[in-house]
Length: 351
Image (cartoon, rainbow, N blue to C red):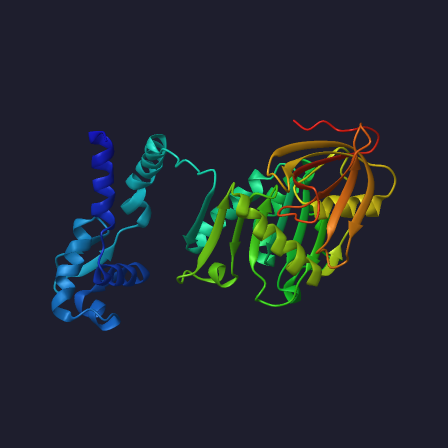
């Protein structure tokens, strides 16, 4: 650390290392402009014997002036004058600290607990930013407003966004709020028990309770950083939350083909709802051996239950083989799909 940077940090520490009495006295004088020591004692919980030491400490920091009179007057210094020198220094300090900052490496299979509202919000923002083709979200109306611009940008980029707003009683009225600006389809779910979550491309996800974002008490969120375990959040969203919510808006901005999917549930729903012929390219694993496989060809059959607990499709390959494709942790199908590409007229290319 350079001497200049160290001295700047020390100066900030000295200026702002205020105790409880100093803060109380400073704010009281600031509101009144000018007070005597007795008046400060009367208006605060500071013991009379401590008032003089307290205001002299404030004077040493340049926050007040002491006018030696009978009685002594404590006069507030204009905050612009008191902190003006630090305002410019603070910007320079942040810039220099940022230049020294080394971002921590994100572990490939990291699963971690995070604490505090600000940290959970930061990870929500990261997950939204990371989505390349598919995004599943459960947000409060306040979070929807907070991330409106980021979600609108994802829609413009062609990302499929499934949005759940909770609690339903406070969800924006579809007649007054354009959900299609921020979502491909939007639903609302009642109750404060519905968690906050975001899943990008089926792998990077964050999960937290609504309580964790209402205050700064000891609440936790769970982060799946590029973890195969992220499917737990995605599956929970699709089978528990999404199926018990009411539709606010659907048939949003139509995305062009080929379309990219992390969730087989979403792929199968598009095949069923849009109708007509489809071709698929699938990257995944053989359910029996665990070997990596690539399957491509025409989609010739689908299986889907309204509960969304069952979703699969069959691909007929160039050699005439028929391969049934399932989602993550598939057991009844031959292939566990990890990445799916659908097109209308020809076999799409993954890669």
